[in-house]
Image 1 (spheres, rainbow, N blue to C red):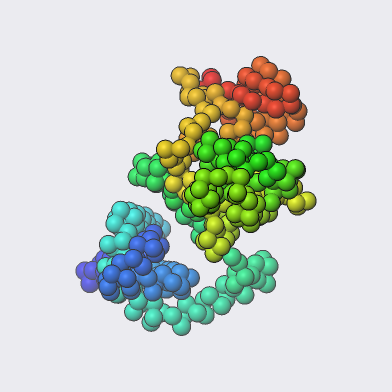
Image 2 (spheres, rainbow, N blue to C red):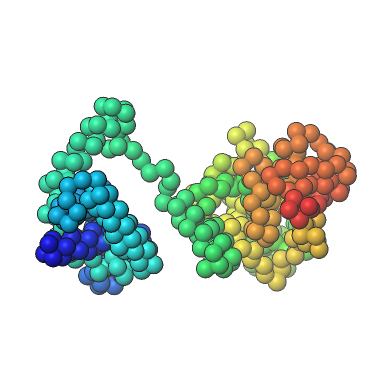
Length: 423
């Protein structure tokens, strides 16, 4: 009787080992294990190899865990029958006692410990579990085959053809947001990592400088007029057009102009501005930021003109614009500080209509949708399905929008307040 009780306790210990191993090996971070493996940690390497085939790992653990639990229950039933005789009392006592022992000491307690110390426990049990999984592999393979055939023929589910619902980028974004919400990651770090991950999701149309804001010069102006305009500009690259702004014939770089001016003894009339201008570089508005960043690096250029499907000029994008999507606003001594956003005491903002949704979300840590519109004014027009009037108010996506300014059909200024703050 004592021997049977000791065997039951030993089996419960094995059950606790399997339960804790399952939780630790599934909860541990494969990325951290890979990092430790690269540093030469052999235990981390064992964990990494075990978790490569999670189906086989879980199958082996469940097989071992169920085997020891069932065996422990059978032995407990025999033990209580010998104590209380055959009947309902022995069955009830065996069921209650084993349920409590298995639930508390073989399930909840080891799994709670494993969650608290997932990495360390995973590295501790990995050398043992790799042998257990290897021994049980033939049986697990048979079980897996039965499961797959049953799922496919009875439920029509082909598990071998299933893909992950989320891409690695989406998983990383979710993890970053979770760490930020839990206070483990600063907003600035969150924004940088998220910005780098979203380069494939953003097109140049979303961040370009609109054509109405581009500083351009007519190539037919006199050389002296062009020199004066370039020297008065805050930009080093100026597009030159021939009569029609859509007909860009070159990009004049201030350095090239100054070199030519020095070479000609400061006589602007001797300079052919079209000859020293660079060939314009055009890109479609649907180009993603990652594609454009790669193109800039390949072409060794920092400046591109954005055109639509008809070849009409839509705007311009620079290498700095793309980098700012990652690291935030980059300002130098020649930049004009125009943010267009004024934070109010009620938790809202007064914002210019041409401020982009992405910039406002990044500044205020909001989550306004930017799939259907690029600017705040565009979002209001899209959601309101109309050209709003001054003082008109809208509420959607958890925010209240009040129109403060309008020029013809263009919304120039509005106030945005989160509804929770407005309430």
